[in-house]
Structure formats: C-alpha cells, structure tokens
Amino acid sequence: MADMRRAQLEVDGRTVTVSNLDKVLYPEAGMRKADVIDYVLRAAAAMLPHLTARPVTRLRRPGGVPTAPFFEKALPAGAPEWIPRYTVEHTDHRTVYPVVESAADLVWLAQLTAVELHVPQWRIDLTDGPDRRTRRLVLDLDPGPGVSLRDCARVAVDIRAMLDDVGLASYPVTSGGTGIHVYARTETPMRTRSARAVARQIATTLAQTHPRTVTATMAKAERDGRVFIDWSQNSAAKTTAAPYSLRDAATPLVAAPRSWDELSDTGLAQLTPGDVLRRIDAHGDLLAGLESDGPPHGRPDPEVVDLGAYRRDARPPARAGAERGKASRTDLLALRPMLASDAPVDGLGDDWAYEGKWDGYRTLIRVLDGRTRLISRTGADITDEFPQFATIGERLRRDGRPVDAVFDGEIVALDDAGITDFALLTSGRRTPGRADLRVRVFDILHFDGVDLWSAPFDVRREVLDAVDVTALGPLVEVPPLLAGPADAAVREARANGWEGIVAKRRDAPYSGGRRSPSWRKQKNWRDVEVVVGGYRTGRGSTSRIGSLLVGLPAETGLRYVGRVGTGFTDAELADLAAELAPLRIGRSPFIDVDAPVAGSATWVLPTLVADVRFMNWTSTGHLRHPSWRGIRRDKLPGDL
View 1 (tube, rainbow, N blue to C red):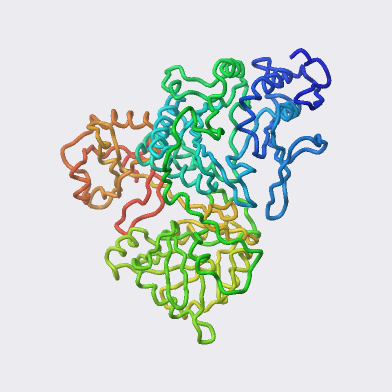
View 2: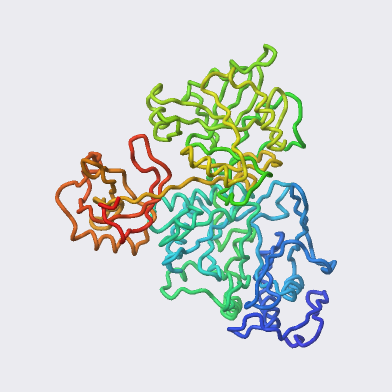
C-alpha cells in the first residue's frame, strides 16, 4: 500500500480519511492499523459477497487487543453520507446499521478499528418487512473443554453428509476462534425461522446419534468433552462472524473458508491473515458457490430439496393491536405456540410476570363453533389423543351463544401429591383414565371475535382472568401468577416441587412459532449423592461405559434409583471404567432393580459415592433427567 502514509485514501472512487496508521492493534504479531487496512483491501473481492445486503455489527478495539473491546450496532455519528445503511425496527426503538458494499466501506470500518464484522444470515434484498429471509444457513461448531479442532472437523463432515442427502451444497469455515462454521445454500429463499428449524434438527439428530461427543443443548454444563452445535445462529436476531473477518484474539486469525479435503488433515489449524491472502491469490474465494446464483462448484441444481415440516410458516397474521372481527379460521389454525428462551431470570423485577413451569404437552386449544381442537407445538392435531377435553368447546358460551377462542396451555398429569409427572402423562395416553389429566391454561390469543396476540401480555392475562373457566369443567385450570421478583418466584416453584418458572415481559405481544427473549424459562435442578452399583456398556461396545446404575441406601439395602448416562467427558468414562474394573461382582447389589436393566448390567461393589444433578423424582422413585457431576472422594456409602 504505497499510499498508506497519507491522511486520505482513494478507494473505489471514495475518499476515506485515515489516521494513527502505526497504532499496533495486535501486539503479539505487531499488526498495525495500516496492516488491517491493507488486509481488508486485498481480501475485499472475496470478502464483499458475504457481507453485501446484510446489516453489520462490529466488534471494535480502539486501544488494540490488550484493551477492552465493545460491540457496536448503530451507525456512529459522523459517518460519511456514502456509507450504505439499513434501519431495523424494534418494538420500542429503531437501529440504523451500516451495510458493506465496497472496499471503501471496509476501509472506513477498519479506520474505526472494527476488527470483527458480524452479520445475520438473512439478506435485506430478500426481506419484506419484518419477515426475514435467507438463502443460507449456518451451524457453529463450538468445542467444549477437552475437545480439539479435529474433533470439530469430524462433526462437520457428518453435517456435510446430512446436507448432501437433501441436495444442499455445504462449505466449511474455520472460525478463527476455536471451532468451525458449516454453511449451506438453499436455492430458494426461506424464512429465518425455517432455516433455524432445519439447523436445529440437524444438530439434534447428531446429538442423539453421538451423545458422548456432540450436544445441541445451550447449557454450558453439557459441553465438557463434546462439540456443541449452535443452531441458533440462524435466528433473525443473531449474527455470526462473517467469512474472511479478522477475529479478536491475541494472535490475529481469520474466519477462513476451507476445502473439505483440508478438514481431514491431522495438522488442521486456524489461519492467519497472511495465510488467507495467499490462499485467495492462489485459489480465489472457496465460498464462491455460497452466494452465487449459479450451481455451486459445477454441481447440478437439486431437483427437490425436501425440508418437510421445517419450512412451515409459523408466523401469526400481522395485527396492529387487539382487533374485533370474525377471526379467519385459516389464520387461527396456522398459529404456533410462542416459546421461551433459555435465558437467566436473575435480577428481573416488576416489568415481568412469573408463572410456574409444568412438565407436560404444550398445546393450543382452538374452539370454533363449539368444537374443540388441540394442536401441539409442532402443529400436529392431538385432539383424538385427549378426548377428556372435547367438552371445552361445548361449554364455552357467552350470553347463551357459543364463543370462538384460542387458548395456550399445557396438558399435564398429576401425581398423588398434585405435582405434574410427565411419565404419568405418557402412560395416561396409552391407558385412558389411568392418569389425573388437566389442561393448565396460561394465555389467550383470541376471544369472541377479538384478536389478542398483538396485545401486551398484561392485557391478554386480564382477558383470561375474566373468562369463567370453572364453566369449562373440572379439568381446566388457570394457575395464578407467582409473586415477583424473579428470585421469589424461583423459591416458590422450588418449594412446591415444580419443574421451574417462566418469566414473561408484561408489555410483550404474542410471537407465535418462535423462541422469544420476551419469555424466559428456568428449570429447577436438584443435586443428590448416590452410590454406584453397576453399569451398562454403550451400544456396540463390550467395555465402554454407557450409563451408570445408581442407588440410595435404605434400611433393607441399596435401593435402585436409576441410570445416569449424560454429563461425562470421554476422559471421565475411561477413568471410571478403570476404577470399576476391579470392583466387579457376580450379583446385583440393589434390592429392587428392573429386570430389563439387570439383563444387561455389570455389577460392582457399591463403594463409590457420586454427585448427580436431576430434575425431580418420578412416581416410581427414580431420578428424572439425571446428569453426572463427579465422584465424591470425601464420602463413603455409610455417610449418606
């Protein structure tokens, strides 16, 4: 860059003022602001197609990598008028984002020390109003503790195979951090919620197939020894480091496109800016097919891309507010439940309402002309599975006439203590009349010609409280709200043995079919110390532990309380196998183990005490959703 000593640069017909070019931004590599500008100029031809038509969020380092960074979304004051921009409307404000369309735009951002550029997967030119559309999806492979980049590469190859099966071309990018991004292109634009659903299904399928090495769960406690597949990056509100973007680290690295052959290299590593520029010079943009309108890399266009249910449009009809008028049956039947995000509730106050969280089947109850339909969260009609609730529609009347309505709730089964029990619910489906079934209603979306899903939660709750649910029969309940703030609601839920709480913003509308930050859920987990009495080997293995069989001391012996098969790292499983091998015995140490479990168990002397986290107890006295936390070396079975 011969002109780098000047105060102004001429780029793409624009004059960009630059300063402090000798400022070192990456001390370990001696990389200056001038070098960052040089990089974006030389990489621009490959970089721009993956930024164009997307609002850009920036991570800035005004003082260089040793100082604190900050994320910036809004276009800063004083930006040149020629910088493209796009306005995103929010419920209570709007944000004007910059959009990158030229090398001049990249240089201007580099001058502001915007070292990382993040973009959503949706494109402005495919978007109509709030309905974000995209032609690509991404899966972010994030290695947990003890997991290598090579482990991520193996998972990436498995994702490629799944995408190949439905005719979608895929492209790997080493993230410049610790993991890998896998992109896929769809020939037809799709809604971001549909792309998110496809990505989630891929992640969930791989986690179920390889539970010891892959997780699709957001909880960090589940990531030890596993690759976390982050499918949520496809949400309209999420962003991902753009391909070819520099990353914020002590050593300057790049989100670098790779070939699939490279992912099998035992020396696979993240790439530096110099590495990437040499690759661009030699091979061009390895991601060219991701944004190209032609068939990628010479592959034929797929005749059919069958994404099944994951392309369903779950968006409710747009409404300016609560409106009166006969509701369209098509509109009502297209609605899907609003879902809560897994987000902390700590510190939430009076701006939020709090409800108990119930362990059951989420359902929308649609009453049309006196008839009741039950629709699951996936859109399936489950009315015939729960005939107990058929009379709701017949009983819902106003001034003697039938009323149309849409309620949101949870079908639950209660145990003898009045606590929801999912196992009872599933057995109750198989044997009608066996379980004490109820439907707990907590929201109302339409009532007697008035659409309510655009109204704030407080308004909807006021309408729900005004409905005489006692007339709907003894199986319908409207649980009361919990007293706030959040920590008080959590304590009440724990004291009552509930699954957890849901916090809902009082001013939030109902956003059907998506997981919204306006609703947050928190489950109540418990810890218990148990005794290891045996194990079962993993599928297809004669030595590797698949799950541990655990119990609690009772007056007559060791009482079996269930199997623990999650929460382990590979290293922990290997250590456990070695520790349990000399403890093997020929008979069960439990007084009451299930026959199917006993048939494939290896028994051990019950000498090890372990710490296990679980949700609650089943009606049969077993642990629900147990997860391994570790051995208690400081305790013996007699201490429990």
